[in-house]
Image (cartoon, rainbow, N blue to C red; front, side, top):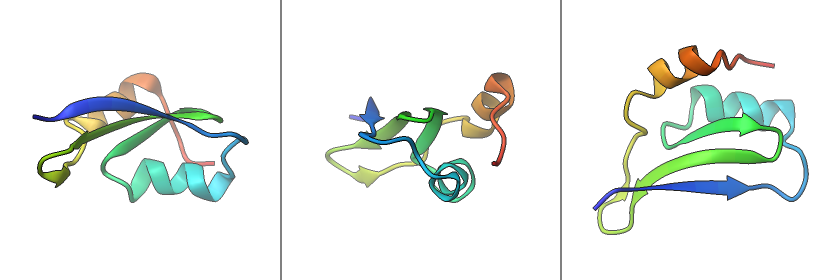
Length: 64
């Protein structure tokens, strides 16, 4: 029962938010300054994004 979501931010993310999503948050992947992809389960709570490290490498996303 897991699902993929996207989160839109009203203002661009700060560098600290971007870095947090990249390294410390296992459920979200920042895509651009105002959007992040999210993975989770309404029934079981937060579940880590599958293969997040591979996706980060493929998209070439880095710390700011």
